[in-house]
Image 1: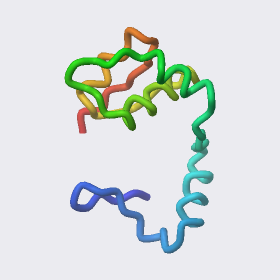
Image 2 (image 1 turned 90 degrees about the vertical axis):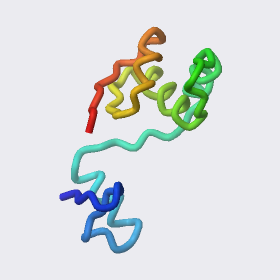
Image 3 (image 1 turned 90 degrees about the horizontal axis):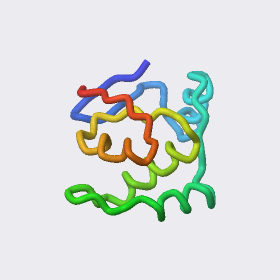
Length: 92
């Protein structure tokens, strides 16, 4: 169970980092590490006016490369749909 407090996700069961990884595995979530292909996609993304955060763009590139949906409440991520981003917008 995740709790939200002061804009941050908190979980009272997470005492050490290993607890976080165990929770992620229990939820069936796979952690994808940055690979060469992700960086090639990152390099192919044009800088879009008003959105130049490199961390966001790397997450977007990873989602495009892996052909996996990206869930975000960032109102600017939709600008990358033209590159093949499958965005699930979550306004909350």
